[in-house]
Image (cartoon, rainbow, N blue to C red; front, side):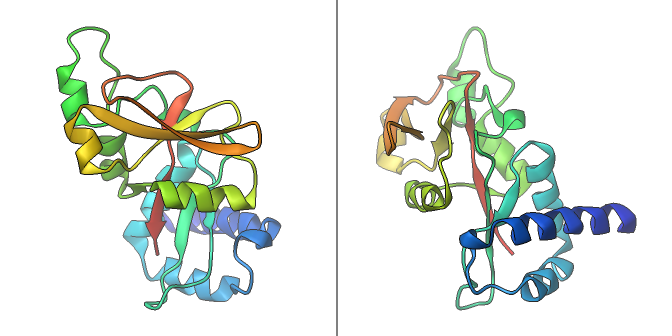
Length: 181
């Protein structure tokens, strides 16, 4: 990222941070800004989260190591990360109508991780997310070994966790990611 583009993007993150203080009570933007300035590769990952529709924001205080967790906070699953099956194995198993990629592979290229079920539920404390869409979440190996993968959404005021064949993909299912900075 060029210096001017980086500063504009950091300004976008700062504005979102200030508009949604309920996501990170007691966190000072100056501390987050220092972490961002010292992590150019992670800033690049955050920028890709932004350009694919994720609206990343800090979702809590710093951990013991001083890192802040950024999560996709777009109201619906990020538009630029939908219609993906779960992982490469699932993608390769499809014989017809293959999607353009897999959530796990796209996340790896972006330098982020899929939200865990616990992170997804924690995110829902800050608003109502995925009312019309759904998002793949990190799936336990024992579920994946059997051919399945997990996804979540919010309906009827509740967060639901479901399963699907990992090779499935839908226009309204994407994935939410996170990265520690």
